[in-house]
Length: 105
Image (cartoon, rainbow, N blue to C red; front, top):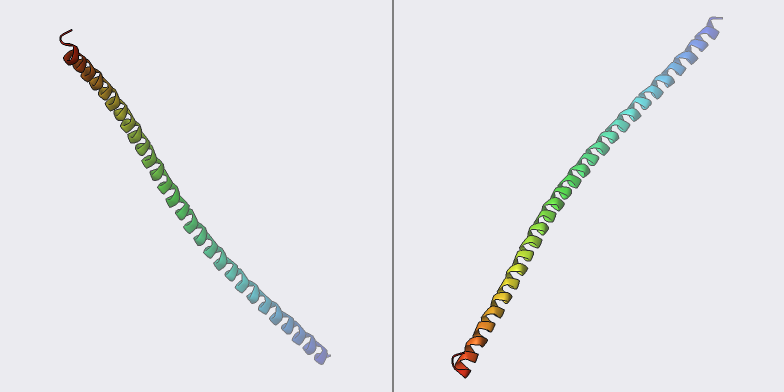
């Protein structure tokens, strides 16, 4: 009778050991998983930061483009004014030449 009990106890002990081993493995896996999640989160943060920087840069570029466009329009306007002035000068010069050629009036 005692032998049977002892045998049973041994089996139970073995089962308990296996169970504990499994629990340990499970915990280890959980730890690894958590570590991986942390790494992934870190990477995501880096990516987010990069995206933010790029967006900021794009904003600056857009602003610069706007300034350039404004400047170009000003330059164009100035050129137009210059041409107008040149036309007026030509007209005056022509009138003067006419006067010189045909005398007064």
